[in-house]
Image (cartoon, rainbow, N blue to C red; front, side, top):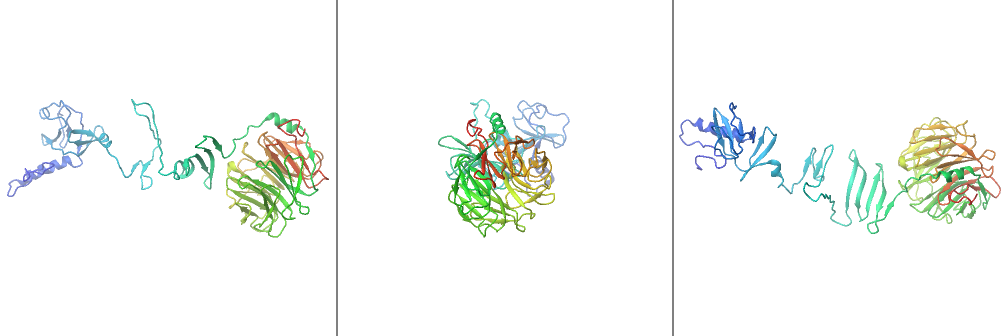
Length: 552
């Protein structure tokens, strides 16, 4: 009755003028003790315990036996107190802990169900955290050593995981992180092509893209080459051949453009024509330079589709660029230093140049070859050459002066760190082999060991060389797995080769000229080199690896 019991738990109410009120109150408290944070010992015990303790409670299964349990309905909750078993009225929605199974059961209108079964009906949760906290952005969060998703038993055996975006220009992606910093992502990144990007923590690079129309896969970088040993032996075993050059200038820098199929060389001397180009390394054509500066180095950038050259002389214009090697435009340099080398990093989308002069800023960078910014260098050394080593994510530069630290490295071209060189030699040039994961540097001074190598840009090791020549340039040919270095001194042997950068052997140069720079052309299958001395033939090439009768 409403005036004698509570409507849900059937707790006895005190009546006005009631005698022995404590009995009614204590009975209500005992029921509260049973129902608040409700706990039973088991839901499967059928035999009434012989020696229960006060407060013990059970949910009875069907077929329960015992003086007080027999005849009770299936699912009744029985509680023992002061020598008596009493049935407890449990309202629908009550949650009860089951001690022997360490689980919870929920009272429904039709009986008891396991809590996990009841939870199957829960949806539209605002967020859920498992082993960690969820938040308004990561509405589902899991911290666990592993996670498993599987097809259901008895089904088709299929399993699908769908990632859906709400707009065509939005992104749907999977992220891989280290210390919660994303290192790789895969998905539809603003378009319908499947794209994989990776990061070294500084910048992002696209690794591959699958075209959603054609299904073709485009790799950002070609896979590592497996060297053709037969071709390497042919190139290494043959002498080099002279090539006629259009002018006897001091040719200082050389590079190859795969996109144009063209060598480009720059000179430190000449009047209005300090450029020459060649499609085969044999026939060279003179080109008009942007200014009569002492051009020291040139590189090619596929991403910006241009050559870029730097000079050691000039006023405010010690840089020039060209889309084809033919037409050149003068650019303002960051400072009038003796710029000695320039390289391009596709991953950083950055030109970097080093200098042999300047105070605290012997480095400059540019994203486009037109606008340059001076950068702080850790030491005012005669920096001679700089390269980008993509696989270790470093710019690396070498110097011909300094004590114990003629190397500097930078992950971004902005912040530089001095590194201990293997010896205080006049280091002139660097080359990076992605296939070997190795840097090789050559020097113009030293005794018996004018090469040093490093697999990380930090720790360097001297290597034995066959001759103490004035080694000026070194180049790597991935297709045949060969380093080739050229020198400006020596008699008939101004080049040396190595398959690993560690073991070197002398080769036969085309002539005893001041060879200053060498470059490899994968498309032609040959090395080319240019010199600052000689009459009419200040260039040479190796034989071609692609055709044994070409330049053989």
